[in-house]
Length: 251
Image 1: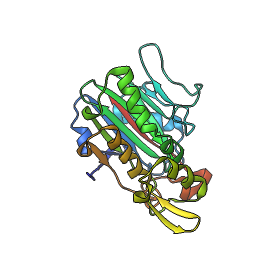
Image 2: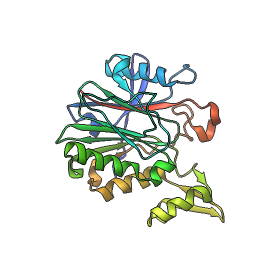
Image 3: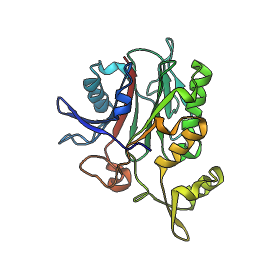
Image 4: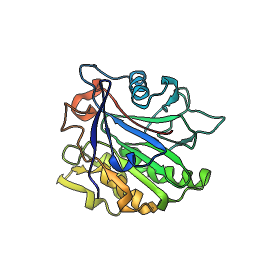
């Protein structure tokens, strides 16, 4: 498993990138982190930051109405997601100049790139989306709509709450146990009703199950709850927590 990232600063905007994704010449990507002295980042503010980093207009940054679902939006020449749409938690495009963004504050952001067909996806995977296998459904839609093949894909898993801090109860562990026979590999039982689970590694396992090569999966294993100077965390900060954004685009 690769563990590498670069901390970047573009005109005061702070963000992380994955070197292996930086090598793909037809895309740009960013994991936007907590900004210095900026207060709570709203969706609109994050779009402005993403536009600054990617040298785009704010309107070129597309977000979705995230509802912890397993629904995937497919952008094409005629369709574009908006805040008024029904809930989606992943989106895909082969369009040039549209940056796909997902907003997080502990959940797992996943960027997927098909190097052969030139298709990109951005995925928001909380525990519900993870239990519903949203990354696998995203890959299936990439195949169905664009002819993508998992063996040609590269993925980047961004910062999320780590197993160290993500304690869950029966409400979460029950659906996870039913869905994943391998859950014990990525969970630690603390007492009769409490577990610590690793959402990043469960999503990585889903990518491998779907056919991605392990060497093509890049993981930033930084816990959003453990690093308050870098990340917002809903679990740590509560309902007033700010948000971060993972974004990817075709140049």
